[in-house]
Image (cartoon, rainbow, N blue to C red; front, side, top):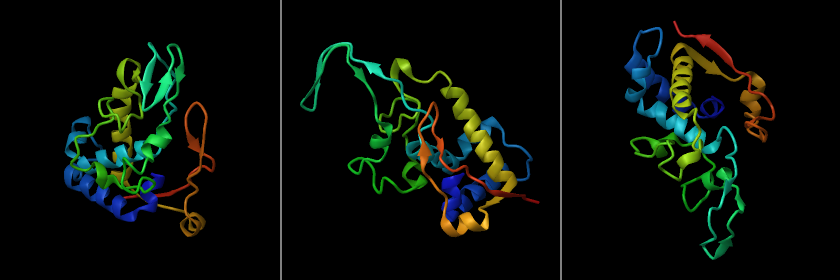
Length: 184
């Protein structure tokens, strides 16, 4: 929501998509998700910039060499998603919120595309991924379909503080406050 509030064109585009697909229905259904490619792109881009949790450490099963570095057997390996997701060699304008980079793209966050692994990959992928996939799309889609969202005057003038606090989950240092008006 914070990223969309700072990118009014993306907010407008996702709300127009929701209106065209969901129409006058009061609630979004799970089967609507597949018909909303821009909403899916918004969520992928959000998870790229703001992965929900740090990945747990992995343990090297054997000694391996990767790009000239030797990783000994038994070493704990931490994956730095923040650095991967903001790598200029992998992403165009990596710090910019651009859902279009995932629009009409086959990249998913289901653990097969290693450039986008907010829930991990392989045997240690998050068990809650299927639930998270459905719920994030349904919650964000429902909120954007039923309400118009604006920032309070001060935040609109100064911008949203996007600094994050590291912990069990990532959260904003300064909580996001927004104004919602029901769409009639």
